[in-house]
Image (cartoon, rainbow, N blue to C red; front, top):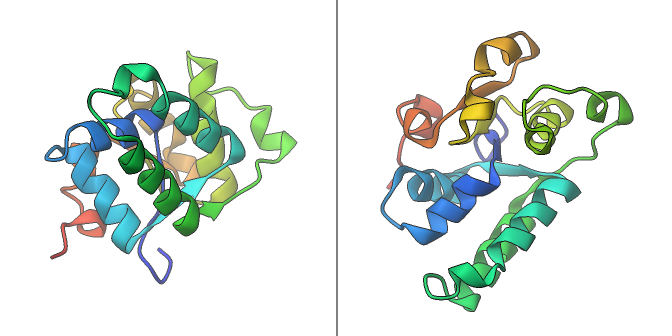
Length: 150
């Protein structure tokens, strides 16, 4: 844990779920990490978030201003890491596109990877020895590190 709180890799789908549904676990967890923790980003994870967040299918649910604010907040607070070739060469997930989140956690030393993606969640046991714990937003909110703060 850093001075701000836990360093956390958050899957793109959690960020997007959090901005779409303001009252759910992804929204609460995202706000807690932005206010009290430190989101971990790589160029690859941030690029994916930007690309998906700007999809026209979200236009009727989220304003452009809210999307810009989220990207700004995450970018400003992020612990940016560069993934080494040794780490990026490792394959973990059935969907190779999801490996970028594990790579970010390994490269940064982040203890948590928060996701709702079942392809990542099933790997939790396999990655425990590396120090990365993969957890859902709802389960993360049950932990002292992520307990809601007023």
